[in-house]
Structure formats: C-alpha cells, structure tokens
Length: 454
Image: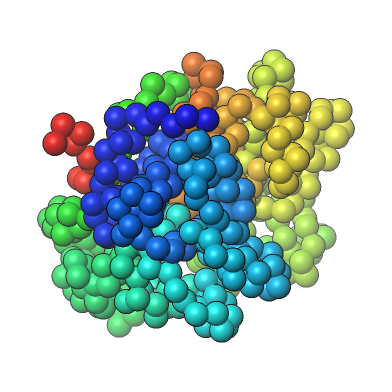
C-alpha cells in the first residue's frame, strides 16, 4: 500500500529524524508506528545515521502490530526485521539475524541485556509505550539504563505519558536524556517540583506539585517533546460517555459497608479480610461488581446487579456489537455464564482468531481485559460501543482500551462508552479519580503540543 502521510504525520516524521532524543506523545489512532518506521527508514537508507534498531513494545504489539505495519507499506519494502519473542531459543535466533530492526517485548529487556550474553549492538532504541518505563525501580528500567549510554538515538512513543501524575515523568525522561532535563536522581526531581502530601510521621505516601511546577516541568522537556491530539488532526467520531447506575439492596449494602468499616466480613460461605488500603480498595471493587474472593481463594457471590444491567444494555444495543471490559477473573466467569444462559454468541479477545472474528462483525459481544488489549489492537472495525462492567484505577489502560474503538478508521458517527456503576460504592470514586488524572495529563499534552505552522 502506498503511504501518503497526513500533514501532522509528515511533521512528526521530520521531528524524529532531526531530534536524536525524541519523546513523541501521539494520541491514540494517529499512526505512531507508521510514522516511526518511516523516519527510521529514512535514517537507515537515506541519511545513513542509523545502523541497527531495537524496538521495545508490549508483547502483542511486538509480535503483531510492528511486523504488520512493515509489511503493509510499499516504501518500507527494504526494511528487514526480526521478532524476538517466544522461548529463549526463538529469541536468540531472532537476535542473531542481520536485521535492520529487531523487535522485542518489554518483559524480555532484562534477559537481553543481562542474561542472553548477546552483544548489545543497537545504536537506536524505540520504546513503544514509554509509560511502561515509568517505574525507576523496575528491572526493565534498570537494565535499559545500563546500555543507554551506548545508544545514539532514542525515540519514546506514548499517548499517556503521565497517566498517574507528573511523578511518572521522571523515569521516562531519565531514560530518554539520562537526567539532563529533570535531574539524574528521583530525590532531586521531588525536591525541585513537589512537596509531601499524604504522610504518616516520617513516611511520605504521596507528593503534590508545587505552585508553578507543572509549567516548569513542561518547559524543561519541551525541546525534545512533540505532542498531538487526534481530535486536532482527524475527523473523529463523536464520543458519548455515560453512566448506567445500579443499586444494592439494604442487605448487600450492609455487607459492603461492614467490610469497608471493619476490614473483615464474615459470610456463610467464607470470611473476607483485608490488610491495607490497597487490598480494601480491591475487595470493594470486587463487591461492587458482584462477587469477591474469600481468604481461601474461593469466589463468593454478592449480587447480580451489574449482570442484569449488562443484559439490559446488550438488549438496548439492538443487535449492534458490544465490547465489554471486565477486570476480575470472576467478572469474566459470571459474564460468560450469563451470556451462555441468554444464548448470546461471544468470545474473549485473547487470540488473533477472536480479534479477527470481532473485526469481521461475527461476534455480538466480545469480552476484553484492559491489561491485555490496552495497547496496539485495532478493534474499531468490529463495533462502536464499549461497556465497562468493572472499572480500573489506571487512566492509561482506561484511555487505551477506549481508543481501541474511538480511533482513526472507525466508520460509525458515534462511539458510545457506558460505565455500569454501583451506587454508593467505590465505583464513583474510581470514575472521579480517572477524571482528575486526565486533567493533569491533558495539561501536559497541551503544553508541548506541536504547532504545525512552525
């Protein structure tokens, strides 16, 4: 297929080619893979500034999306590539191939650098989903930092750079510029731009930005950062987001409140206890969805309110395909039982076959977990409605999952996002938290947005 880039794509290609360090914050659906490959193709064969490229990506994106994009476009026909996923033998074989681009999943970065005994001879790195390197304590981050000085060019790609707040940015930019802009040490970054927020004595649980810190951070990173929103450059379908509220009975609400207040809930089928705030949040989310794991690992049913609501919403879709996002394994099990009872064909989107069936509109209902479908999957051909049965605290996974449908190539005029929310539970707090995080991230995106008129 002939590649005819949009104006914003041509701008981004030129930006990557002329910036040895580039943070490319492209909104979902803007074609960041084809943009990056085009720039690499020019740098390899026209400018001779790049010799061997390592692409680090989520597993399915590494295995499927990058190879598919290389094969798709005519102008990339000279590019050779290998995909280093699978077992160790398969990864070694791929790494030993004399390919221009080697694509590896992020889980194997530490193995490649520390355990494979294969010389690291890449002069360029592409980190697809830079936000997956937001933790400076993660093994993959520490491993990559060991070889970062050997790399002449690095490209960081993401649509969600600060999904959980500005603190995420330090590790991401430390990897890109080795600490030139936001400091070499996390303590230095914290002291410069943040003040302790929630704490217990000398233990600080969270930090909040100092007055003017956001603007100062954006200014520091602006010279290596380009940002674009899909709504600025594409004729996107209308996005409609709404809540479908369900209510617990008095007995169900009493059980929920008992666990919330006492951290222990005794039920005929088993006991449920929690040790800390994070565990409590997890248990309350489960109860809001309708079931909860007990201390023995079994599942205790609490209510079917969300299942009834899901049934109503599927019926209201009147035959239009529906994508259902779930969070817990017992959500998947209970939803599957209900759909089987209703004789509604469905599939879990966990394989290439099921994804193809969804995009061919063979499935009235598809079930998806945000962590497995949050990045890189094109699902817009299969439908335009997503129902959140269970919510996630992760803004990144939330936005990326929604972007599987609300993206370039969506033929529907409207994409509908429905959230099934249990009244008076933690569901409402999660939605509010996602909104608050989104405002912080939106500020970053706007601050470094590319001006195509320059």
